[in-house]
Each structure stands twice: as structure tokens, then as C-alpha cells.
Image 1 (cartoon, rainbow, N blue to C red):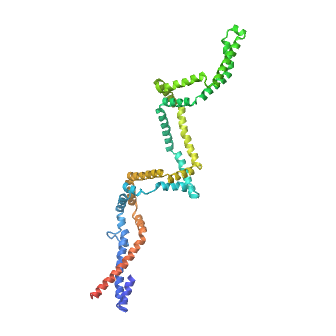
Image 2 (cartoon, helix red, strand yellow):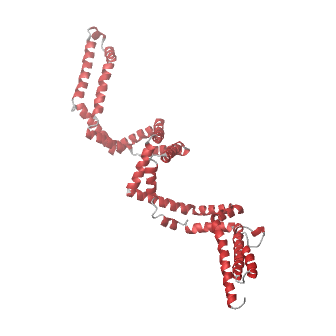
Image 3 (tube, helix red, strand yellow):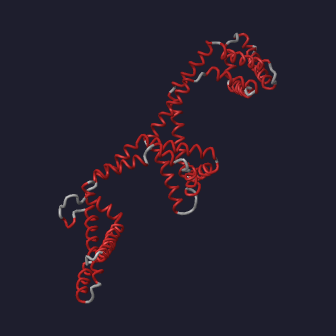
Length: 392
């Protein structure tokens, strides 16, 4: 514009007075362009490095800008009501379902990385101190529930169901078979005991041997009868004894107290604690094996499919996600706002100037260009007015 101004001034004198119009345009355009250059530059730095008042506005107002951005974020984005409204149509379950059903189980390097990430996450969670603490809580919870369990009614119900369905008969058969095997194995000891308790005179005529034979034969026959006859009186007496014990468990405080003492003694046994702890270790090892195999991908696919097809489950997941995000905003929104404000305040002037100028750099050039063109147009308009009123 400066070159056009100089050229038009010369041409107006040397060629034709009509170049006054071009001179008016160039003169006003030069002023407009310089004015806009000054204004835009003054936003970010001191023009020409001169400490002119009210220049380098953004660096000087950095803290105020940070507070304004934080307030804008808080008032327009990080209020529970606004977040809840914006999340009404957000389908978290569908997004997660697609990721698990397709991203974690499909072919390709991306899916492989997702599966590896899932495996690594599961294994890390299983090996963290938090998992050990969880194991201790599980163990304490199991033992606490066992101590609070009323064992007598539970044992009574179990025995009553076993008696009604005849599940105790194999136990009696096993006891009878054990007694028969024990009788055969201990026959020499029994004969020796009978011989010791027989008079020496009777031993001379071998009465002790006949007595031993009769006793052992009688016992074997008795056990054979019990084993062969489902309706044997011994079995009936066993049923009656069970029925009596069940009644005592339900109605007699002494029996109930005795069962409770048995239960507490069993729980206090260190072996029970080791058994419960072993259950947790087995579960943790199973989780690790599950993650290392194909189980992680298969589980991810099943969960993803369920999230996409089960509307009730998807609705529950979406509701949980909304409540979680709204709760996060409610509890930590101020911390997020403070983080934005403190981050902006922590930038140095060169950083904030470079970030903002790079974001709007092309628009700043158009501001200067538009200022030049608008200034030139106003210069032409003013020249036309002067010509019209006879000032030129």
C-alpha cells in the first residue's frame, strides 16, 4: 500500500488527476493495515519491542485468562446438571460392547494388542498388594460368616433330607463292610483274647478254639445279615437314632450348644484357615491361567455380546456410567477447574503466546488484510464525499 501510495501520488501529478482516487484508497489502506497490525500484535507482544501501555495484553493477563477459562469450563461443562443432561443419550454400554465384541476378539494387530492389554491388566491385578488385601478380606469374611452360621438347623435339615431320600444307606453299608474287613484282619487278635480269658482246663480240651469259632462265625453271620437285609432291625435302629438326633438338633438347646462348640472348634483349627486361604490362592491362580489362555478374549466377546443384546443390562450399565461421571464431576469438578487454571497460570508468556497465536495465526493475517481493504474502501468513500461537496 505504501508503494501504491507513492506511485499514485506521482501519477496524479505526472499522468492524470484521476489517480487521486487510487491515492485516497492507498493512503487509507496503509493507515488501516498499520492500525490492525498494531492492534493484533499488541494482543501478544509489544509492537516493535516498545513497552507501549496496554500492549502485550494476553501475556499480561495470563492469570486472568486462566481463571476465566476455568470459570467458563465450570459453568458450562462441569456442573452435575449439565453433565447429566449431555449424557442422557450417551450409549456407554453400546460403545463398550462393540469394543469388547469386536476390538478385543477380532483379527489384526489392534485386537492382539487389546487382548494382551487385558491379559496384562488381569495378571497385574491378581499380583498386586490390593489383591492380597482382598484375599485377607475374603478369608476374614468367610470365617466371619461361618462363625455366625447357625449350624444346628443346617445340620438337621441336611440329615433330614438324607434320611428322607435314603442317602444314609450307603454310609451304613460302608460301615458294615468296614466291620467285616476289620473282623477278618483282627481274627488272630480276637482268638488270642478269647484264649486268654478261657480256663486252662477248657483249653486242654480245645473248648477255647470252638468258642472262638462260634463267636467269629456269629459275628460274620450278623454282619452278612445286616448287609443283605435292607429292612434289618439294626438299620431300623440307625434310622431311629438319626430321627432322634434330628429332633434334638431342632428342639434341644443342649444338643444345639454341643454342635455349636464342635463348629467353633473346627473353625478355630488352623487347618481351616489354611484351607480358606488356599481357596483364594487357587482362585487367583485360576484367574492367571484364565487370562493367559483364550479365556480373556472369549469372556470379552461374551460380555460385549451381552451388552449389545441385553437391553436391561445395557440400561443398567448406562445408568451406572452416568452416575459415575456425574459423581466424579460433583466430587472433583472443582479440582479439574483448578487444574486448568493452575496450568494456564503456570505457562510462561512465550508458551501462552505461541499456543494462542498458532491456533489463530491464519485468522490474524486475514484481520490485517481485511483492515487494509476496509481502510482503503473508507478512504475512497471519504474522497468521493469531498469531491461531491467540492472540497477537492
